Image 1: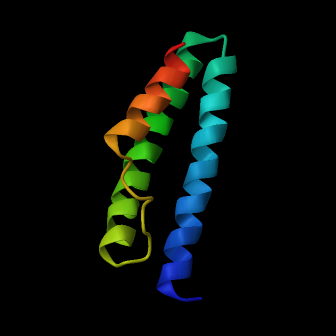
Image 2: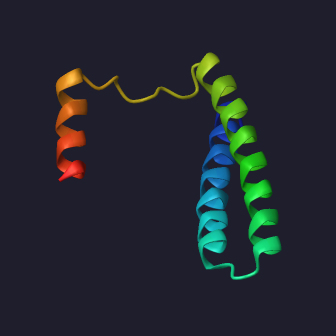
Length: 81
């Protein structure tokens, strides 16, 4: 397995983990448990972003094109109503 595949696989797994953490946070009734999961999630998000920057620098990941001001306004209007 090449480095690009491994990096993208880890990014995909972390993204899935973040979704799971978010679900657990919203369903946790115990405040201490909720805070613990939030701390874990925050650490995972920081790791994901650092790995994303490496992937982007090496050309392993190409982000979507930047939205135009009109596209941003349209989305704001759509969700603001």
